Image 1: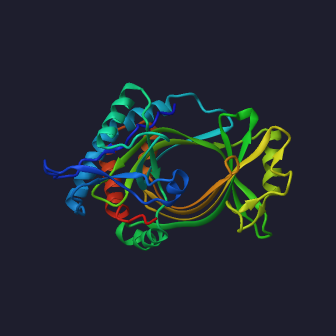
Image 2: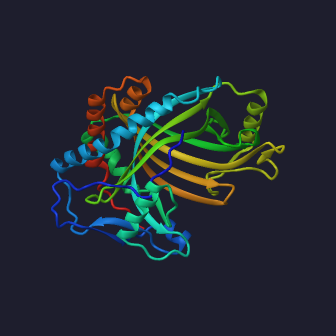
Image 3: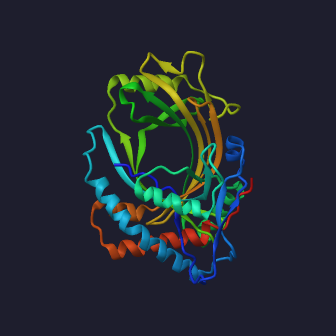
Amino acid sequence: MRLPLVPIPALHPRPNAGDGETLRLEPFPCGPIERKTGAKPLALVASSPEQGSSDNAGAAAAAIAKKFLPDLLAAAERAMSGDAPKEQELVKLSLVARVGKVLFQCQPGGSPFSLDTLREAVKAGEEGTKSQLHKTFYTSVPSECLDDMEQSAAKGMELDFDSSKEHYHVKVFDKHRSESTISCKCTVQEDGTLAIHKVELNQVRHLVEDISCVSKELDLRLMLCTKRILKNLDSEVESAIKNLVASAVIDPNVKGGLRWPLGKESIGERFSIVGVWHTNYKAFRNDTLRLKLRHADRFDHRSSTGEVANEVTFKLIGLSRILEGGDQDENSLKEMLESAVQMVWDNALNYKIVA
């Protein structure tokens, strides 16, 4: 089951905020969105922002965990009690925290909006009606952010280096499985060809909560999803994806890093290439958390659009294990969630996105 996104993010109340503090919307420079829409998106900011201290970081983490945990428990229960996975699928529950910026835009032709518009959007969402307001969670951060977090991972977050990897992700559309996209995670062999490392279906989102952290430069997304790894492929599917991957040519001068000779982007009328990613990442971890710093070059063959992004993702592996096991001790889960959110709050939300 996939829950719909709320029309606007949860507004995190600033700890120790006075009654006179107010919020405002202001234009936010974001090149990719401006080039697409022709206008700057808007972001929520505090009228008198101030840097958070360790004290209000703890209060912020507690407030976020208190609001998010009931929905998380309900979503995890629904995910684990839903349709049984097919024999050829290995399903894993995953809770992640991502950093980025919550941005707002009006639908084309819509009138300018204000905080009152946000309140109306909340009401519209609660009543199940559509809003003219569009929300985006923009996840690309400056490369300096990744460099700095790599240097501080071991010191500030007490994480150990885990791995550094390069992958090409070949996205394949199968007409017989039109509700999903097959993703082939590939590595580069010594002879320059690609080898398939893992075959997955697109993940299913069960809960997404975007939180505007108005006293910080960046915002927070908490997301519960299931990953679906294909274990045993039927011969036709296996042959098709192997042929499509084998036909790929590594080319650093094209978006996504891969191209296909003319006529090799599809097999018959059933299978076709719909996208490609080229990713490089470094990962750091401890027993309960895994930090992934990723540079991604993506290209969508259907829309002929691409993007390059630097992304920061925290995989909350300790919480994911407990939720997947079904042993939900609410107090211990709350403590673990607060600890994880505070780590992100203290170490990953102070980087400014520059257009």
